[in-house]
Length: 110
Image (cartoon, rainbow, N blue to C red; front, side):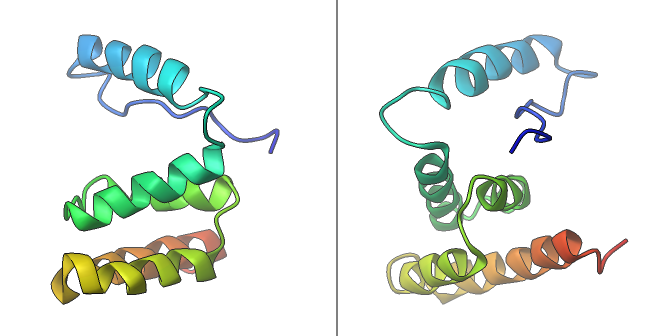
């Protein structure tokens, strides 16, 4: 998708060095590696964030997963599957995050 912005760390104003390292190593080196597609990396990242209960990072990566071609149904199915391995509270929190991200994508939370 040509109009997509590259992933960038959001804390450049307060932690410029952490931002630089994140941008150059994680987003410019790790994410574009040829071993996995961006879509697959997004699905793995979302699953990792769900299981680790990382609510702060999850919305950004849900949005990025949608941009990278993961469907809404696939995201919901992944969380449904993870509920059995990561627990219901973790899954229900992720679904709440997902609801907000989907609403934003639909323009419902403007």
